Length: 226
Image (tube, rainbow, N blue to C red; front, side, top):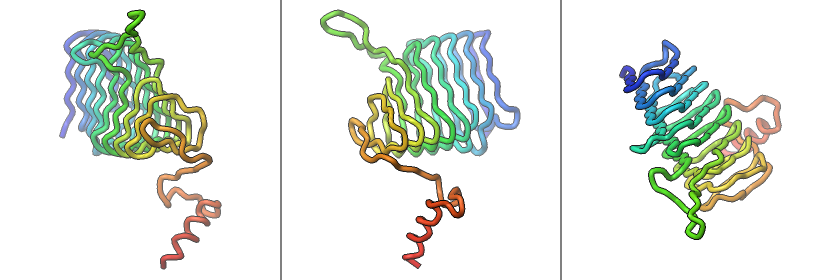
């Protein structure tokens, strides 16, 4: 499958672990951009396109990424954006992170699970939004922040100015438009809201700790069907 890296200008920095370049495509049109991929386990397909200057994309550890596209800028350049993806991230197919506006910030924590067809859109560029009365430009994002151990369901759409706290689940098909503050919740709907509190999600039964209340509860339930 191989990797494909191209840069049209100088003073860009790309750092990729030597053994993990398969399936990675990076295209940069601009100067003083940084892409750092510390770990990306195979097989993976990761495409990063940057148009603009002084942008930063850092991926610390993706366990599985079947198809992730990261776009910084459009035909209009985006400058000084920051994308930071944490450790032990799992992603499935056709997911998009769109850093279209200058100054965009998106931070994703550790141990997160992303399903299929998820979009994180941190701005509306090249389209423009203004306050009709004052003329003020209002398409300004103060950042998208996704906490640690967050599970994002299929076909979720996350817009600018969103916070998802640690240990939360975002239900399939949800449109998230605001900042949430409470951990251990299920967030769902359009627009998304908290629909259940005080939950704990675990990736699969192989991650259950023996003798824990979760382990006992799960196997008590499963034994009913034997």
